Length: 329
Image 1: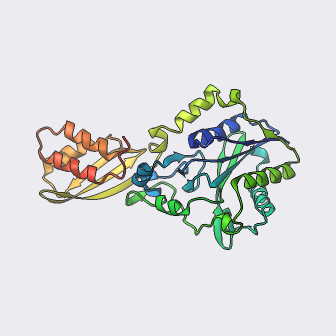
Image 2: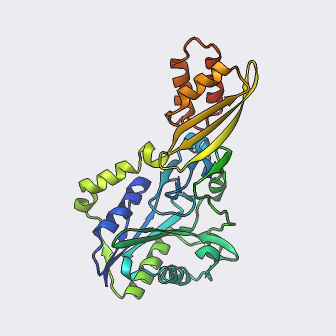
Image 3: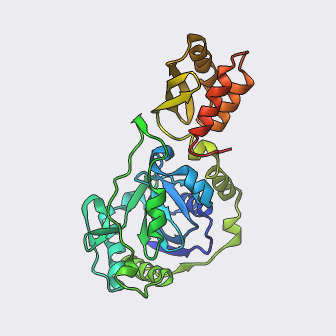
């Protein structure tokens, strides 16, 4: 098998996630790619996850931390320049998860770190996780990628990886938290650049084919890649790809407490049940919120623009805004 190793100089998370897809599309039947990158501060969720359940969206928006969704499954991870991402792209009929994990483990051993493969196929040291992985299967190619905590900001990791909303029920895949560790806790002088070289050497040893794929502007600027980058930044991909879930809000209205139960599918409110209020307000609320994106700012705006003379609608809109986990405007 012939292969190439590509080391990204870009910190742009949507670019790098799109590049993984581009390499899958470009893979030859007897080839392989290893793509290595470190990104900007971001929380990257799995394809079938719920961002409202996985991360603190308001804090991320306040701190300028990007939300991203990848094409593979698995749980939410925090990315920053101290977190290396490795992506193996191999032909589907040659893919073996255990082999790829052994290559990753060999890379870490090259750094003098006594890592092991733990439960759920994570890489760990001293019983703490420093690397998880996820997979995407296409007709002819498989993407097996993972993260390596080298010198990531663990305080930020714990701050952002927590729910924004109390989810009642959900069909989304939930993350499984684990105690984590930076590899610099084992080797204080370890760098991302050194870890990149270890992964490159381990891949070359296994596949017995050397090569660094240089940054090729012609490839990076293809219309297909640009389209993939744009798709990774859309609300529809980031939020609208979320499976069905339910929330139940307790609202403090001037006339007393009320309860608003919402069903949300693909980021759109499919039903709204307001209780503890006059019937006409409940009926109007259900009518207006059904079909609205689950964005409290937009929900409140729709209520206000279609109040129909109901003064209580404005009070309800204010409550929705106060419950907003993020503006998402």
